Length: 397
Image 1 (cartoon, helix red, strand yellow):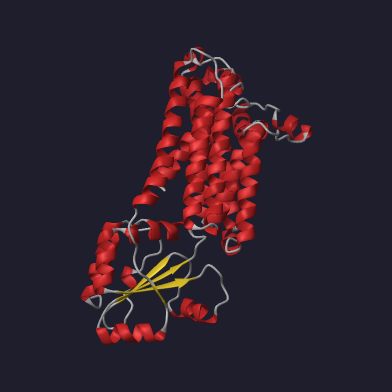
Image 2: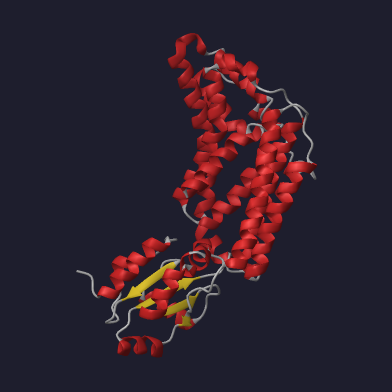
């Protein structure tokens, strides 16, 4: 999540370089400089009000989207819903790639463009920046809202959009404080369209991520690799920018290289990955056998639409150390909750008080659950090995 938030912060900063926001930078900075009569403290207060207004709008949107998470999580069991979400993301990506333009009603745009005096004016500017810049940042924000809704956590929804707001507002605030540096900004031009197309390819990648669970694993990996490679080629060589802008040329090369490396790693990882843990479907007989053999049990409650479940399956449960220890010392049981309605599974959910997926339950050698070892999110190999060692010892103190 830390790397995700850093990426979202960088995305927020990059949105400042789109054709809808970049021309607002001199206007916004001039607004703040015109309110610098009260000194640096007053200027900083205006900046905080501006970022606060921007953060308030976006964070409330994030929380509202995440509040639908319970519903969204249930809907994401349906392949048609996953395909629809991916189609929506691609649709918004097409706007950023230049195939169509997002337009808001002129009355709403005019109302958002009004200015007010005092600290409320700075707050209002932050509140309405998203409306004024909607043609460029709207598709990206709407795509991010779709992703946050699938996460189902209001706290994470708040953090994601608060971080996005900081990334979007901090450069403007910094330029306002050091207003003399604005002359060093590059001139507007085609390079801003390149940044906008970069945001579009990010949405295409999110669409490929959403549609992955309904595809065969091999097809899902190759789809992500194809998106990364296509984005690298398009952004690195096909989209033209002004000659002589060394920073943009360097950034284009870095993005192209990163995309090609990602595609190579995805395909290479698929070719080289070894066998994972051998799971068995849950049954009373299997647990009785584990009790007779005096073996601890791992029960993995998962669903194909659950991202952390896939991470556990593709990373942690494929580590050779995990595979070896499970094969020698454990009985491994998997409960597939991709499609709800199975009465046996529903009974298990109640028996083990499973609130969501992933949930990995450990039973000791006597068949008793070690609640202190329960896993409800992605764990690294070393962390899971520690849990497994504790499960082999027996009952908790």
